[in-house]
Length: 359
Picture 1 (cartoon, rainbow, N blue to C red):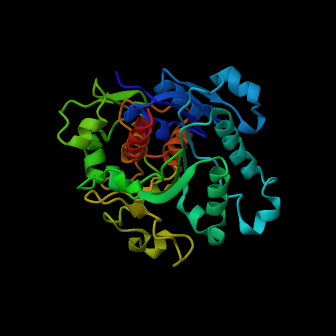
Picture 2: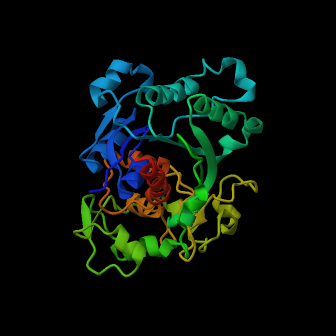
Picture 3: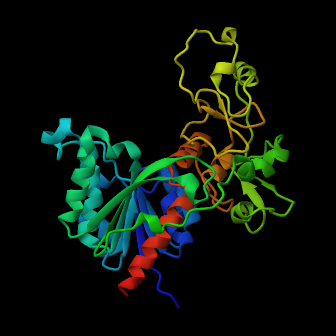
């Protein structure tokens, strides 16, 4: 039986990064996040892991050991610690910036566990801001600890996620430089229609609990999405205020606020962002899923509303068995903040092959 490498996820949110590693055959030991509703979702979906709600700034080494043991059996540490505090303008306060304190809490886990691999996910701007100061700082922190560091900005749509989402990933290995080119890309990108089209017939659903899909899944992606019992949760359909519905009714697929008559806005502006009142195009990948609900900038391709939590989750490549807990606002935030599981899986599969070399 193949060995399962053990993973801990810090700043785990609801567990998108963890889910990808689980899909790639890793053993998810636990996760840490300070958001209680995200941890409730995490524990609901990783029954063999221990998700704890904790502010890492208050987590002493003994607290870590009380919850996860001495970490000596942990092979991989993953997560999305804040890196924005590393800036050239802030270089004299690097150790005092609260965001950097959180980053060094991530590093504390690394120092205790000495894992074989480390993954850090962050926004792509972290690479270029301040002439790459943050990137250089992160490289040095881990190179000083004996790791070979590499990074790359990845587009989730290249890896089977029906969404254009650009994120930077740092990967640290003990011996070799991680080769991002080994990640398996899809030949044909998954579309919005493929992700959510089979939910269109449930438009009148006001059931907060669940619906059930009666038809069989007709594409590879839909087969991946389906839960064993074909049940779908988190698909409560809600419509926005009448004025919002009226505005978006003028917008065709792929278009934005520019198609809305000026008199429907109380303030005349020509500098709205291109994503404002953007209607998704069924035949294309989605724009980046964000953390909002009532103020979200992307609208359903057919109906005059934003996507439901489940539709957003499917666009993020969460399968239907992954159920979100907490308030509706929190669920949207959890989905929007997550790493798409299929992007994480593509990364994890290459990391697993690297770790197997050393066994």
